[in-house]
Length: 202
Image 1 (cartoon, helix red, strand yellow):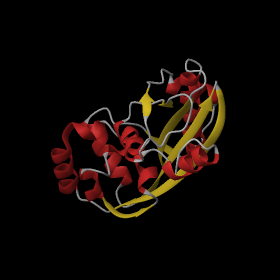
Image 2 (tube, helix red, strand yellow):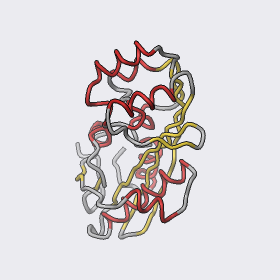
Image 3 (tube, helix red, strand yellow):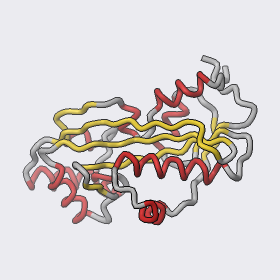
């Protein structure tokens, strides 16, 4: 049974495998389209420094960028920031940067700010930011090296040098927040919006 009730295809403005998996597992048919935007340029020009606001700004811009070329379609944009206090982290360029990030995060709690925005004909019609609080355990240099050896190249593909759904789970002692927020898409508030708009069958 098809759950999507929109008259035009639902579009995800992302090629993120995690976000595509979440929507597919929720039974939603969609098209994935890359949002071709200059994220760092937009962030710099906006002068926004709050990690939650940055995530929402970029989610909005991704949704609007794809929406303008897909009239009549609901377009989902999403973004996530990792912040230790007000310090933002980016994807590490290699093992040395990954190790430095892990040293900074070990034994502390950081926040994952996951934003979602939905655009229709270039206009934002829904947005939300959900937060997960992640506490890494204290780790020795030997433990950090063993993790980096085991995780390999994957540490450079995620901010904070970890993927919680993989080997990254070994880094943590406590997690506060839902699975969807951690993977980068606040799915529950998004589905609530789609139900309010009568765009899904359940």
